[in-house]
Length: 259
Ligand code: NAP
Image (cartoon, rainbow, N blue to C red; front, side):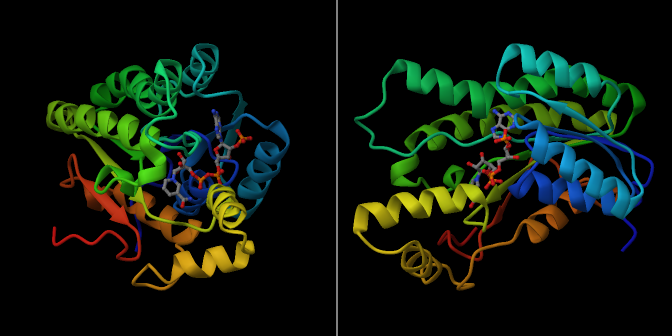
């Protein structure tokens, strides 16, 4: 399917690996020029070079922490005039409800709620002026059903979801859509880190921890970054203009919900 976005320009935050990279790659395959970001310059430059050569698109990189005010200013400066914004950042650490203090919550809110809001606030006006734009926020299945050990994520991402629900309906008249993609478990470094924690806690191997987790998913496997990227690219396509303010679970059926 031709996504109809060849020649557009996209910012994909936190995109040298994992789900962000999946989104960058799928957009590059659709002919979209990219601004990519991550803290580590080496992996970012390597992936940017690969996407330039494999897809023939322009790729600009900005290596910085997207959750810091200075990093946000650098990325927003490079991304002025983009047609597409994909927000993403690392997730908060796991723990117990009784572990966290105010500072832990402030950090989680900064990273997973206020950072995407800052990007939307900065880049939505340019899209609205042009009468076309797409925003996809990478959130989590924890927004639909809480994950006990990820209380910081449950809290911060649900706050973002509320903001998006109201904002998406205010920018839609200008031809701009905002939607959230809610990943369940995908085979990325983040999943490895979480599985490593479970393996250490239970005294089993990481493969055993992974197999145990996969068995709880109706699809009986983890998602891939390519599948995730394809869903993101569709939401950014010309075909998705009537999808507004939605929260789309990509979880292999893991969240047991009727709707
Ligand atoms: P990942 O494989 O660890 O990749 C994270 C990417 O983001 C890397 O490119 C990393 O590069 C970059 N990054 C992290 N923190 C950053 C920051 N502060 N500023 C700029 N770049 C940053 O993670 P992932 O699995 O793709 O997860 C992406 C998001 O989805 C996370 O918020 C995660 O919690 C959420 N999520 C993931 C899953 C899953 O199963 N994978 C499920 C639910 C939710 P650098 O380290 O070089 O900065």
